[in-house]
Amino acid sequence: MAAAARSAIHSIDWPKLTVSLGLQKETILALQAFRKRNEEARRALAALKEQKTQVNFEHYRTILKNKGIVNEAENALNSFKPTKVDLDKQLKIIETFEEKAVKVVKAKPEIVDIVEKMVKKHRWAVPGYEETYGY
Image (cartoon, rainbow, N blue to C red; front, side, top):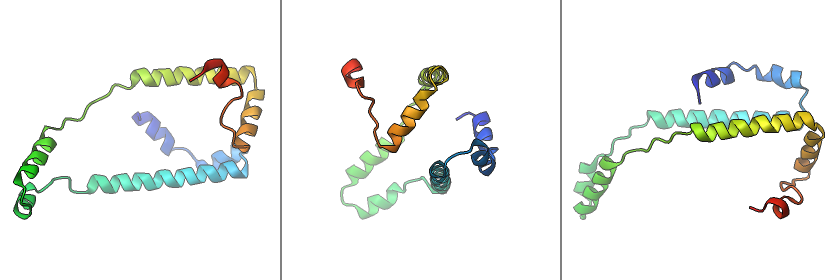
C-alpha cells in the first residue's frame, strides 16, 4: 500500500464517518468488527517482526542424529530468494473495474438496492450469470 494511502487510512475519523454517511446499525457493527480484526492483525504482524528470525543450526546438529537433514535445511534456507512480483498490471485492472462499477451504479442506481437485498438474503450469485457467461 502506498504511503499516501496508509496516511489517508490513519487520518479517517471513523465515528464521524459512520454518522455522516447515515450507515445502518448492522453496517456500523460490521465496520467496527473489521477495524478490530485489522488492528489485531497489525499488532500480530508487529510482534512477528520483532521476533528473532535466525535459526541455530548448530543446536540442531548437536541434538539430531541425522546431520544431513540439518545441512539440507540450512542450504535450503540460505539459498531461498523471495520473488518480487510487479502488481501494477493487476492493480490497474482492479482500478478499471472499480471505475466501470461506479459508472454503472451512477447510471442505474437501482442496482445498489438489488445488491443490498441479495446480500441480506445471503444470495451471492446473480441469476442467469453462469448460463450467460459461464466460469
